[in-house]
Image 1 (spheres, rainbow, N blue to C red):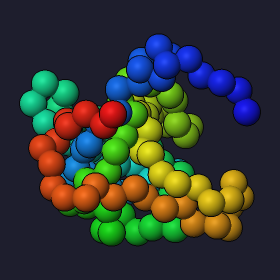
Image 2: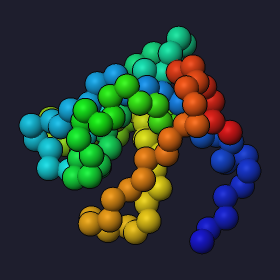
Image 3: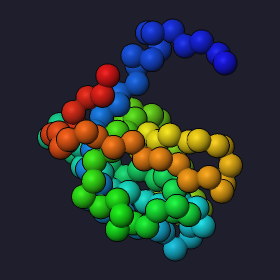
Length: 116
């Protein structure tokens, strides 16, 4: 495993956000489109996650999760949609059959709360 310098890790901006919308795009066979509210100062971001095989959109709406929000935008799918972050989850096995575990926040916190 490669070592990461603390200064590089500190460049990540990890924040708690509330999923306000979730849907499976027509073109998708794997990813779910999430609209996540990060509160004042950051606002809402669209984030795609490869989780639709394991979760239904309605299971995520209204729940808070940690996200990396300062990644470069990444084009997703053939329609030119872009993802502006990444949900953080535990992946017991890196295959397409083992469900990931979405990390839960211990209690409700303001949207945009920094994770350290």
